[in-house]
Picture 1 (cartoon, rainbow, N blue to C red):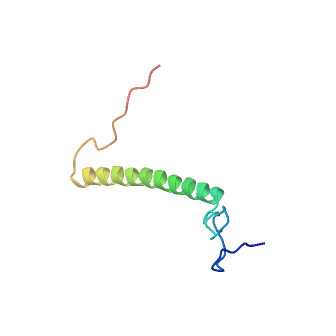
Picture 2: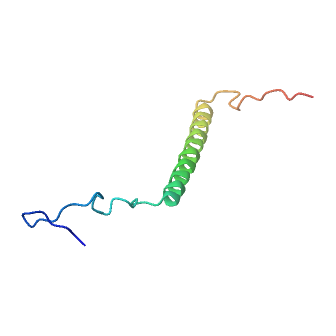
Length: 78
């Protein structure tokens, strides 16, 4: 039941019209999964990059004919 004013136009109710903005475009669970995968990929990428840098430094040492190119070993506690 809609009421009209003197000019014949509908009187707005106290509730705003539903324009579809109430629903989120991406569900919360999907967003959480995406952020978890993104964080995992970033951490694994960082670790992979560090490994490549270490290999490159070792190769540079070997190609430079330097002695003692091995990674430093820390003494084990007995």
